[in-house]
Amino acid sequence: MNDVRKHYFLDRWVITSSNRGKRPFDFEIREVNIQKRNCPFCPGGLNQPIFYKIGEPWRIAVIPNKFPCVSNENKVSRRKDFFESFPAVGFHEVVIENSEHKVKFEDFSEKHIKDILDVFSQRTKSHMSDKSVQYVSIFKNKGALAGASIAHSHSQIIALPVVPRLIESERRKMEEYSSMFGECIFEKIYKEEKKEGKRILIDSQKFYALAPYSSVFVGETWILPKRHVRTLFELTSTETQDLAKILKQVLQTLDKIFPGLPYNLAIHQAPKNRDFHLHFEIYPRISNFAGFELSNDMYINSFPPEEFTEEFRKVKF
Image (tube, rainbow, N blue to C red; front, side):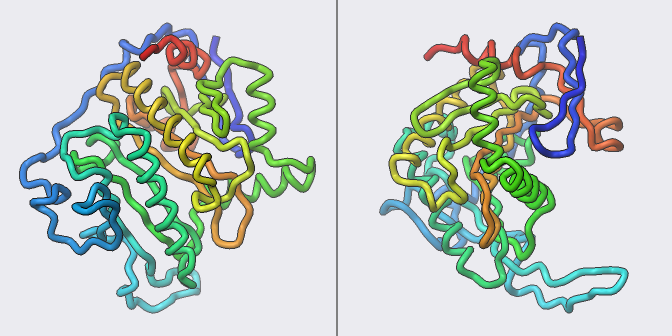
């Protein structure tokens, strides 16, 4: 039986199809090769300046993106009539997550993942101090089908002069809910999902992982702090350590269920001087959007989150 599900608080709908009887092995992962020769992120091929690093020689390095989408060198004039635009100022960086080419993120040690999260935190705090920056977007593309053009494990940081529409929509809805009910919507999500017991993947001391009720992507996973935290740099060291542990476990399990999985990982955090609830969203790139999804901003998920949760819980290490 299919049903139409609404996002927890956004005006977004998903058709969940549970009558197709698909199992994880029914989803074909058609990965394409990424150029591995002369890797620009390996120590021997790196020719970009390093802004920030951990280790000597470095284990994690932050460099400028060679083809930035925002830059402080953009000098175009502002336009505000029927056609509105302004200079794409900001910062675009690449975080090289390990000096070794072939090691996957999920195979890093928990300590190394914590170090990467600490780098994200430091760069977020640094960029937020710039008067032109309103939001810091952090994301990871793993695999060519998820948009990666280089195989070496890396992520990107883009400090933006505007707040993206999705983040602003989440913030406004959170604010509305809080003013009406006196609690954060994400705290309510945890209570209700805990009560229903069908979609919580991992429930640790400081964080939990969830297959969201109206998942857009097959295997979509969220990771959320139980404490109301706005940004990465507000996490305590103990919380960051717990986050590293659960992030590693989630990615390892996803790779067990869908071997060779391409995915996008996105960190949603507070815009400048605004309230928010920090969370991570992981989007497995197994199926492609087609005409229905693109023309209606409505989605079809052929592997319900409840069935995905059953598969997730079966995985043992």
